[in-house]
Image (tube, rainbow, N blue to C red; front, side):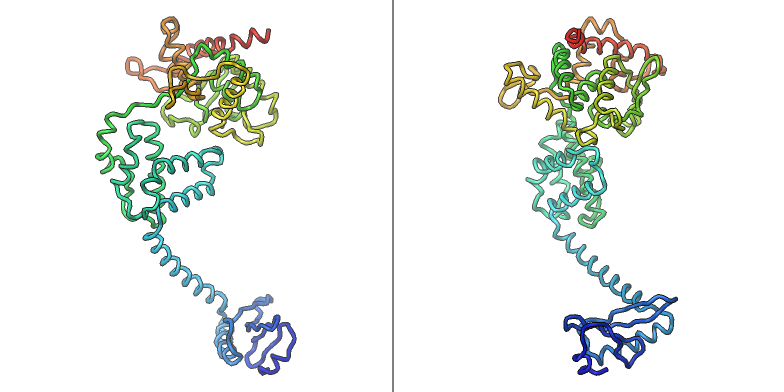
Length: 434
């Protein structure tokens, strides 16, 4: 077939001649040569490079024909060449990225990667919290700086303003450490991770490390108002409100509550209990994770069975997923707005003031844990209840007695503590129910 004959042909695929298996595909006036052959009864097509002449196509087809007759699939060779070429381009692009990638772009890429692998699938607010932490503390100093140019001194300057606050400082520290670990793996940063408090960074932060407190106080409702707050939570009847009520009755962190599943509970035993999985516990591998349940805590569970009888999750959101870690703060904020409209006193901590000098809105963590501990720290309760058992109710690790002791011996003491706490928390609700 000649060029003139090709020009006269209509669209379609037809043999060109000159080399066995050389074909031409014509579509809308555009030409593309290809080799066609059969292997094990299956037709194979391999397109030749674009924009070549008939003469060039026949010369190249001869080479392809020799390979096909020798049992070599030219498509595989072509794919391998493309991969090699792409690999070289990618390696070059990666080197360029290593030199030009700003900290902000790397941090945003890391956030996207965490989302893709499902790090925050049970924590809807986790990604937003990480971004806000970066925006507030890291981006003002590091945002436009090339990641590979960031020094330990830069990291120290980012951490210094909040390093004396242990909880906030550690959250930012581990966030930056994970981002730089990601940067090293992807070639954006070369050398050792600069976010390492066991190295030079630790020396730079040492003066502030000495001043660090063990924790930051969280705004908590005075325990005297817990019964009143419990009534409001139960009357709300939402999963979020009942989850907060349950966290108060069990004096637990909200993470364990919002991720709780029915399979974790032992309810048909003389002392009902809740076994918190290790992945839901802050003190991983550091001791007790069993919560004994009061009759009042069981009442909350019964309420949830009535609301979500078929759910695997104990306190599901409206979408049937785990509640977010920000659910309590949003709910308390809404409840306070409603109380102010009704002329009622909002749920605030009178002992903690914000920047404007106003009492701070309570937090779930402070109310569930600090209020519990304060209640049992009163002079009357200190004499009445075993204080080591109180610490175990909070899942705090306590020192052994006389070198060793069996924590199970405190099960009865812990149950008595939770019975007292549950009775106190429901004191107004039970009266109202009557």
